[in-house]
Image (cartoon, rainbow, N blue to C red):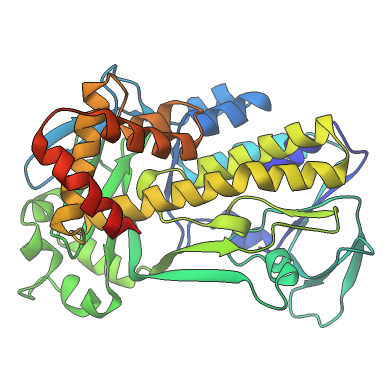
Amino acid sequence: LLSALVFAKHYDRIDLLEKRTEKEVQDATAARSLQLVLSERGWTALRKVGLEQAVRSIATPVVGRVDGTTSEFQPYDVSGRSIGAVSRKLLQEILEGAVARLPHVHVHLGTEVVGVDAALRVAYSKSGASHAFTPWDFDLLIGADGVRSGIASALHAEGGEEFKKSSRVYRELHLTSWPFQSDAFQYFSDGEVLVGGFPSRDGGGGMFVMHRPELAQDLFDVNASNSLFARFPSLEGALGREALGELKRTKPGAMGSKQCAHWTAEGSVVLAGDSAHAILPFMGQGLNTGLEDVLVLAECLESMSQHEALENYVAVRRPEAEAICALSDRHAKRLFGEMSPFELAWEDSISGALLEFGFPSTYASCAFTLEAFSEIIQREEAVLERSKATSKLRDIVLPARVLAA
């Protein structure tokens, strides 16, 4: 949807091919996160298409996180800046409304791209259960069709589309009343199960549970000794017993990451967002990175030929995708208690060194600036080198690098 809005002024006709049917679009929350996170990269993209204020009107400012097991509040930023928690459904409705106001943008629901001939600039789609294929001529084909992208698959017929599936799934529950701090992300973790959620503008919120599939039978059985409430007793009063049954009935969603060997083909096809580089959600940058992809692609196309623009776009964005993927993987390991003592010491040393030299935390840099993710990682390494805080810190740097390698 953002791609259609951004490129509307450059093309006489835009066809937006959407795999989901109208009913599926309306029920866009099935096995997908109910709440999305918008940070500076996302707000910048929405500002470019004139939708920032409309989306801010439905977003809930979130200034930090609360550890439910200790009740400790941890601000995202020392100056009190906030990210925005927004309903996936409402955000989609705003974007769809903006697209509908453009007469030369045509939306085709229930239309799945299943083949691409980049050299001839023809894409092939199918609709519903039909075995007939429809050809689409194009000047530029943007694959923004998500993790299971038909366009990405067409570019990787001989391999190179790599998926790394998490050992955990997630389930999400909409709460009509939010029982926690109204401007904070609430989470509980015992190293095996992670419960978390964001408040919403309507006074409710979205609560998720991340767990290994084999734990489901006990986790959502209120009488089991290993149930969710047995693990986190304060959740029973906050959610109520009926929540366990509702979570059990909720379709679990898969988590994981994805990397593609090829982001472009023949100077006519290009991938953006999750189609090219899906990441774990633990830094809250999946949506924001995808929206930023679209802006960078547009900037490239405005200043050079299409073939050069696509190559330049990949050269700029691939390192950023790899960097935020690494940061997200690292944060996931910490949340699930999977870091070694060396890794924990290394990450704590990073936080201390950044503070020592007056830099924001890594999370704050990702959330509240447009600074390249790769540069944020480079700064982590630089401040560790410069830090003279303790001899213990100097001793830990080399082993941490060996572990990382």
